[in-house]
Structures are given as C-alpha cells and as structure tokens.
Image (tube, rainbow, N blue to C red; front, side):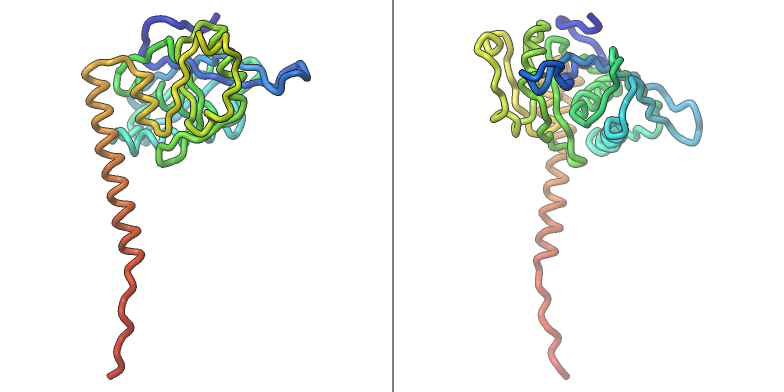
Length: 231
C-alpha cells in the first residue's frame, strides 16, 4: 500500500484514477493514485522547473504545466521562482489524461503554502485555466476503489454527480463531495488552520476581482458608439 488514509501531510494527495478494466463486465477499474509535491527554491537564476515523474503521457504532462500557471494566478505566488517536483507514485502502467489536475494543484499549493492535506480525502477532476473543476471519466469506478481502500471522503466535479452509480454498500462508507472550483477543493481537502483560512480568503478575493474584471470587459464590449454626424 503506497498511500495512507488517516492523519494529514503536507504536499501529499490521494488522487483517483481509472484504468481500462480487464473484464468486459466493467468499462473501468479504479485505483487510488498517491501524488506527492515538493517545492524548493529554483536551482538556477533563469527560473524554476516543473519536474513530474511517474511515466506521464503527453496530456498528463500538459495538465501539470497548466496547473502551475493556475497556481501562479490564484495564489499570487510566482511559481517560476521555485522548482516544483510532482511525483505520481506506483504508476507502473503510466498515467494519461488530465483527471489528476485538482490533485496536482492541491498537492503543489499544500507544499507551497505549507498547509497539510487531510489523508482521509481522495479526489478526481480536471481544471480549466480559470480554476473551474471540469468533469472526468470513470467516476463510479474511482469512487468504488476509494471506498474499498478506506477513503472516507471523495471530491468529484459537480458535473459528474449524474454519473455516480455506486452500490449502496459503498455509499454508506464514503461521503461524496461535489465541487465546482479550486477553492471548493481546497476548502474540503486542506486541514483547518490559520494558514488555510488566509489562503481561502486570498482565493476568494482574487476570484471576485477576476469576476469584476470580466464583467467590466463585457460591459465595455457591449457599448455601441454613436455614428459620427456629417459636417
């Protein structure tokens, strides 16, 4: 067992992944995929690197890079001044897709801000560049795997709730938490402490500022200028 389901840890997240099932009875089989992040000062003056290990496919690599841009935007920290190491543990068959995006973001933010992650929580979900949590595949298989492995809470995209078809025996063992944005993810995944509260407040303020800015741009774009009158 390469993960824990009790206590808390900085920079460690229990992600959820789906593999193509060997049996034709099920489309997917789920696994708990531990993800660990470590953030250190950049080792060169030219800037930091994003170093991801665990036999990642092209889409998974792109997801890690997108997450780093999102973290810079929403935490206010210039992640370019740091080396970010992200390790997908136990991925002997390789990892593809972007469904680990919220797990990577949570692990990196936890390491960057030194806020522990609740290890009884697991998660799956993609992320837009604006921090919205997007739907993923294999949700039912992932949730059943989480319940089997002793996970108490599972964070999934709100848009995936209609796809949840787990048996009653799993529902009694697992609390399913639907989320729509990165702030929601962190609120449920991070352990309560003053640093967490400050981080969530900062995220809320930045999200509100982004919303106001977008609204002003829309209003500006919607203004029609009067036609010039002939001399």
